Length: 352
Image (cartoon, rainbow, N blue to C red; front, side):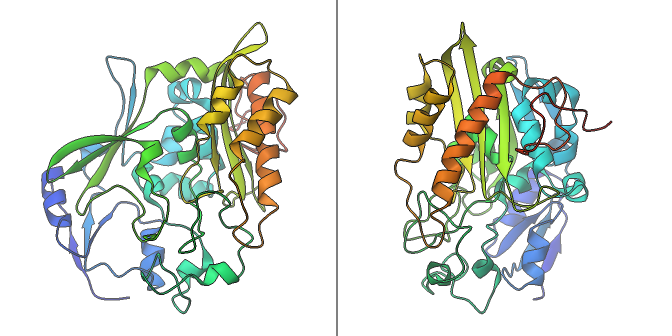
């Protein structure tokens, strides 16, 4: 590991000033960053420790009904907040399906949004990776790539974004508050992450020194709570990143879908929101044929990036299953295996 400076600012203003210096990185819980440093994948010259900034550690109910989640709120604390889980059940289910209980107790909301891909070639410093070293090539293109992207990829990079949390956030119109030297700005979570194109090293809209300070979920999306689910296919149910995942939310009147939300994980370098599929569902019966047509539209532009053609029909099936489970209704209790296809549709207490 390279030598680096360590700064522990007393305020948000001090943190941004410190992190604006070239080669700086923010440190919260470090569940991803420290692993990358130990593996010599990233070599920051300065760590700016923001873990004790109190203004970033709150869950707030705003006057307009929105919920504002500070960037330092722990994943487990958010998922187990009873009001949040009731209002945004698919988001809570996604959080509880991610990583292990120990990591959820440490990992933060802001860090979850900014975690790096788990592509093995990105982590292997002996391999060519345009994301790690721009212009070096992409060994994943001709390597072991069964887990890689089927949407939005380029010849420069076929990696996927690993977050579960981001998938329902994209589906349910979450906004991200960003603070920098130029002040505060907001962007839609759906727009925060970038597709690789020819510059896969540029992963988000963040400029040097900018920090995610909060995520906000609008009050209006509470109306999806009666019919909202997150579903995740992974290689082991205990804990693993998604091979493919889907968040689905529906509004249904007399058996007809009046509004729909949908997003996919594990298929691209960002959470993938297929808005054409959402539009197609409106006015349709809440049945298998409608879900299948939506799934076909959602994956219309999908193509293998290597040995991963199986992901396309798998993603279609996950969409159909997620929409079916959402239509059945959000369980009164969190499933014993959150987000798992093996959970009972009626759910069971996760803390029983």
